[in-house]
Length: 85
Image 1 (spheres, rainbow, N blue to C red):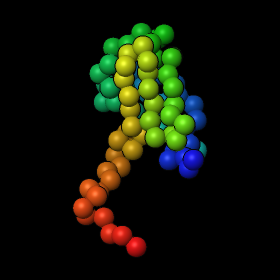
Image 2 (cartoon, rainbow, N blue to C red):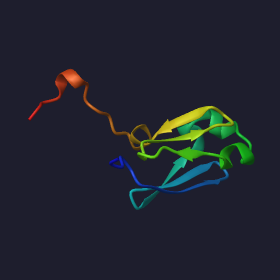
Image 3 (cartoon, one colour):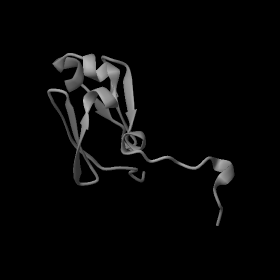
Image 4 (cartoon, helix red, strand yellow):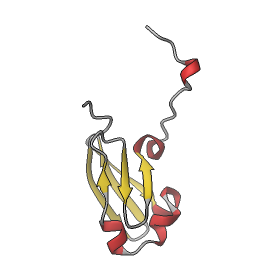
């Protein structure tokens, strides 16, 4: 399986969400990432699963999912607009 992203550490520092994606550490205001995570307890934030492909992160206690592409602002073109080789 090809990895979409390589997810390293995931940390919460007050109202900041810090994540290492493909070797680069990035910081986001938590309220802009997820209202659920922003209001979550430390325990709810601490328990998460990174998808095997590195495409997203799931917090089972919150039933919250975040796409790494969406977090990075990557928008994939609709299939009908893609060029094929």
